[in-house]
Image (cartoon, rainbow, N blue to C red; front, side, top):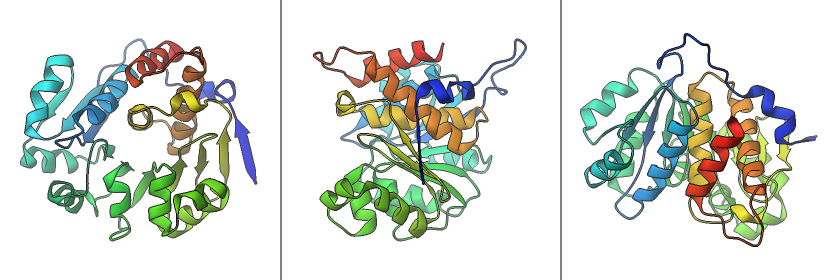
Length: 265
């Protein structure tokens, strides 16, 4: 059974701040990512998270990225100290791990720190495929595109593209996780139900839009919204915001962030 939805049907999930709320009431979030070659990915995810309402945002990244982030977004608590990372992980705040990462020792070391902790964790990029080796996370959301989904299942990406429903079911069953299979008509599965978003089209097929989506999902979860509702709301906002752009014009990820911010009100 598949249930279609649009932004209009899930906008009631949008977080509502109380007049007397403080930054802690708006949630805390830890982002991990930004390898040498892809610092922009984690910056986009962080930008989306901070602009969608999270109260306190921590970012662990490579040392060369610290100044890049601080110079653009001084509101973000950015650091490269692994001891501080261990301390934050112990607080059991939601974690988004992956944007801008590759499969290397830096990624491996962090994976070993977080893999068996009782975290709400969103896995993207290089961290998605790490669960093939160790699937001990207690509560996780996977955000694969079709290529990453294919590698999780050991098949060709064309097979995933041609069989998206069967593919998301297989990933969900194999890895016991919530899965957001990105692409045209993004699918979300929680193991019981499959949801298909009717918002969004090929305007989203540009670099960085997946990082924006990851940051938005993580932000909503940190603000206390149910995991599946966060995924549905984020995917719908992401897609419907892209729909507001003229198809004849190019869409870049940083512009999408501003459109999402307007959409969220």
